[in-house]
Every structure is written in C-alpha cells, then in structure tokens.
Length: 141
Image (cartoon, rainbow, N blue to C red; front, side, top):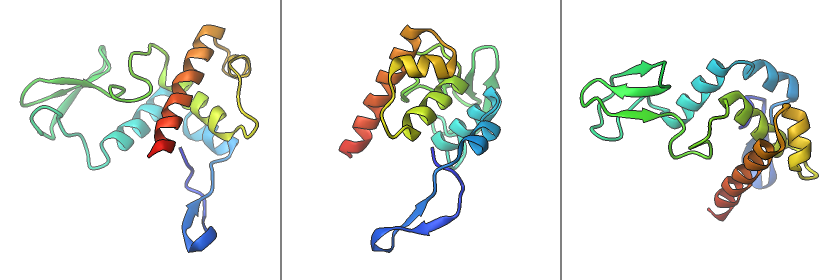
C-alpha cells in the first residue's frame, strides 16, 4: 500500500511513489469502512464485475459482508483470493499489519506485531506468516 505522496524520479528515470507516513495512514484507514472501500477499489478498479457472469450490478449484503450479483445471484467476498482469505480478523487489523511489516526495515516479529496491534500472539503469528508469504509471491513475479 503506497501513499499518494509526490512522485519522484528514482534510478533510471522511473517514477516512484513515496511511502505513506504513519499519520497519513492512520487517518486514511481509521475505520473498517475505509479499509473495505480501498480493498474494493484495488480488487475491482473499474467497478464491480461478477466473477461468474460478468454483470456489473450488485447488492452489498452487510450481514454476510459479501457482494451479490443482481443477475445471477452469485455471492463473492471481498477477501477471497487475497492474503486475508479465510480470516476472521477485521480488515483494519490486516491493513495495519501490512503497514507495520512493510515499513519496518529491520524486520518484524510476531511479538512486535502483537504489541503494536493489541492482538493475541497466535493471530500476530498468523498475520505475519500470511503477509510474508504474499510478499514472497510478489517478489517472485
């Protein structure tokens, strides 16, 4: 997750985006709703599209946290196919964990993540390993 900071020219003239600072991140992703909106925009940058039939109209089912296609009634979750899949942790916790891991140059331990996010050790360990795995896959590409 990168900020909307000023673009700078890095090596070989490529444009880079400066990372989002702590204050900006904490204000931008302070609520579950803000995190859900960002994830929606990242997953469907051109707007919702049903993975089954391609329809672009949907209902948001708040009680289930899923998006239901108006045409075929297929339900899809925002987190399916992401590092957050099969997790019951709030998106806000995931966003913060990803931010902490991505911005800590020294490397992040599960104990550190546990203290920063005020969650249990098992949850912190789970988050850390899922995030590291996703980063490993990204680096392979």
